[in-house]
Length: 113
Length: 112
Image (tube, rainbow over all chains, first blue to last red; front, side):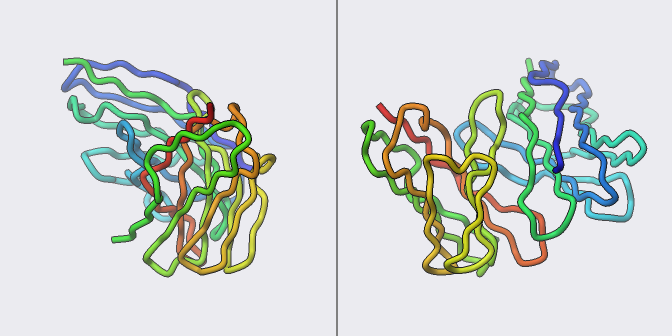
C-alpha cells in the first residue's frame, strides 16, 4: 500500500521569502501525485497534480512542484510567499486511477509579516 | 465547477446518539469518499463507494457505516456516537477512472 511522508509538520517563513514543503512517497512503478491546500475552516482545494509527462508541475497561486522518481519525492515550492498563503498543505498519492488518495499528515505553513 | 456539499458545517451531538452526515455532489461522479481529519494525523479514509449501493471499507471503518442509495448522495452514519469520534469529516468525489478528488467544506462534529 502507498504511504506519504511530509517531513515537516510546521514551517514558519517570513513574507516574500521562498518556501519548500517536502513530500516523499513509498515507491511504486507509477504514481499520481497531488498537493492540496486547506485554509482555516475550509475543505481541501487542489493546488497542483502530477499524472505523467513533465516532472515540473505548475499550480495555482504561484506554487510549483517537481516529481523526482529516483528520490520518490514531490516537493512543493514557491519563490515568494504572501500572508494569504498561511494554510495547511497536504501531499497525496495514488498508484492507479480510480482508487482513493492516500494523504500525508500535513504541513502547516505560517507566513510571518 | 464541481460542487460537493456537506449538509452541516458544525454539529454537536451527545454520546450514544445516531448521527447522519450527508454529502451531495452535482457532477455525476461515480466515486465518493468519506475521510476523517485529526490534528497531526492528516486525512484517514473511512469508507468509499464506486457506485450506487456499493461500499468499501477504508482504513478506519470501525464505528461507522455508509449509505449510497442515489449516485449523487453519500451518507456517513455513526450508529452510536462516542467522544473519540469528535473530528472534522470531509466528503469527496471523483470521476470514473480518475484520481483527482474534489472536496466538500467539511463537517466539524463534536460529541459530548
